[in-house]
Image 1: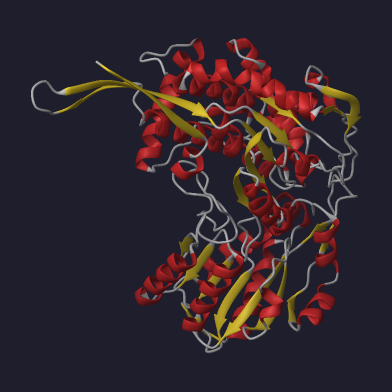
Image 2 (image 1 turned 60 degrees about the vertical axis):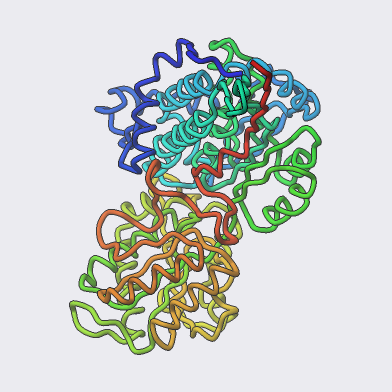
Length: 567
């Protein structure tokens, strides 16, 4: 049973942060606890140098900070930076059975500490991760291929805000349950009175399966939602993006020990490429919750096989993110916004746009009417201009993360021919001034007819997008709805000066179950979401069965046990 007045040093030191974050969550207002600028004026004059030195200090050696985990005695680790260098870090191979047993043994004290204390301790974990944001940025950059500033922001403060958000959402849901009440039912004579105690209990050990492209941002919601609701977590990183989550787990274990709890509340299950640890853990009888970000194949397997085995499964998979172009009163702003959205991290984002629907009748703009072909050409010109300066472009594009992405981007004419489309804009190789081994590619555009569904109803992850010519905007909206309902999407966008079209698009997005952005022409982009305000994903289409972070994302991770007695 939760204490009525919980206290712990970390809870007391972070009450103000938890209160501010809770208020922002309730109001869905702007709130960011962790500054997104890597400037020395924000994080300290020596922070950039200290972060780089700390990163370099862990390379080419064993990651000893996790040496006290249950281990088989073997070492794993084969990370190679998308920018070229081999990281050379090795990690202790987790003894899965011993790790699950240790995690289960850690539950009682963590469970009985109560939701408030757990929130305070976990906020301390996030605060300490934040202090190492420059080090984390290098780890994210050299495992994901993100450019440095994006690695700092998305892998650091933005991910940390999402972690705090998950903590607060979980805290809010647990606060709804009173610790104890006196229940009274009117009756003849004296009323019937009972004492009812409500005890929040965790489901059990949770598994978080990380991805290559956003190792922290996509993993933190599941990690912190499970921990905040009393569940220990085993973190299974992508084999090519272990280091960011190894740092996270090591920091958390230190905080847990300092706070008086068992380090086994969080453990790292690293493996080499081709391993089966994720599958083995997913079917382990001791695992009760699974969070997964990655490709649809394994995601579907988890949603069926693991779910059928009684696991609670949360997934984020692939989708067809869509833009509907009808008209605009700011052509330059629209093209610039889309050029950035396509270029950011070479389109290697689960929220990056892929399919752009344009009516065959053309697009009305503030610069005159454009045919569908002219619009596609101008979009290609905007992307070309945006990435014209190589030194600037690499700081937006980053590096391609794997051979699949590189293969698609390297021969766009062959891809277009295979798909039955025409090349509007070919992908261009960019030489990175600091990392000549990095494979950097600008976005490509392929035009297809809406009838050629084979071309655009599959995810082309990376710097490839389609300009799809429809009969009219009504068909564009119908295609949006149908493709998202069938294949999923994380984002959708519309450009129109017609309020009726905008309202019809809102209806289409609601039917498809996808978040919608309207007429973005400034410094907000379709592939960005804000913690405490924007829900990441909806859980209402096949791209994801959950949202970061709503009540449904946390409430299933705990259960309430009632004890009652007559008074």
